[in-house]
Image (cartoon, rainbow over all chains, first blue to last red; front, side, top):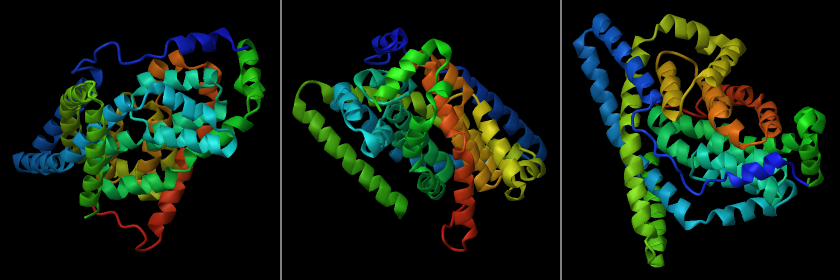
Length: 205
Length: 174
């Protein structure tokens, strides 16, 4: 018997993004503010020559990286529509033991979606029969080594050498996180109110 | 060369996916292309601003301070501070990666920057409050955070080990 929280979470699994994102939200203004401030400091201290040098260098960098960003976006949008959500949930719920962790981490690595999809999906995984190890491996895979994010966001800022090095250092961590999550004592994992959910979760491991 | 190969592979995947979307004849292709165009138009201004902004931020940051706090010589303390800074950095990928890249250019050590990126990826408070806690059982969030705690340190250690090996991994400066 799963607790009411999990059933509620499963109902909230959104099929697609419901509220349109604003183009200029607060993160945009934050970066714009920091950029303007830095530009002003560099201008005052080093002069207009340095400012235009930085500007052209970064513009070239952006032009160089743009084809990969376009490809990453296309792959994300196509996969999202070609692979039904039910298939992913079935995949993630299927495996147990190490195999389950590996599949979950791998799906997290490939899954092209934002937080509005990943977290509800992870919650519904528990309902679909996956253990908490698989849920944690899936989320950690998406957060830490998500392919789409590495291609679209990390590569433009850090370049291939740095991104590849981080991926090499981190690729095993989602599986390790899932494995550790199974080891965490349920007492520690669950507060008194949700111990029933936690123990029913443990029964599935 | 590696980047060129990566681009070729990416577009091969794009071509294969476009083909299978087209074969469906149910509007999947058009919907995907429309959504992708909208997505690119949404992220292009942010990406441009982030990349250009991180260039200026790197130049404007006080280099001595950055090197002192997060430089290669800052060791475990620098890694710890960087991981904590990552957890406290608000916003989406553009903020996290722009700040990490700016710090790297301004003289922070790569292990420290990797700890920052890993800390930001795993536990940025902002995303946890807005996205994770509303959708997931709180005990699962607690377990996830708890088991992820060592990762920024392990990443930094592995990166430092690789870099200390002469010629094993060469980072070409951008």
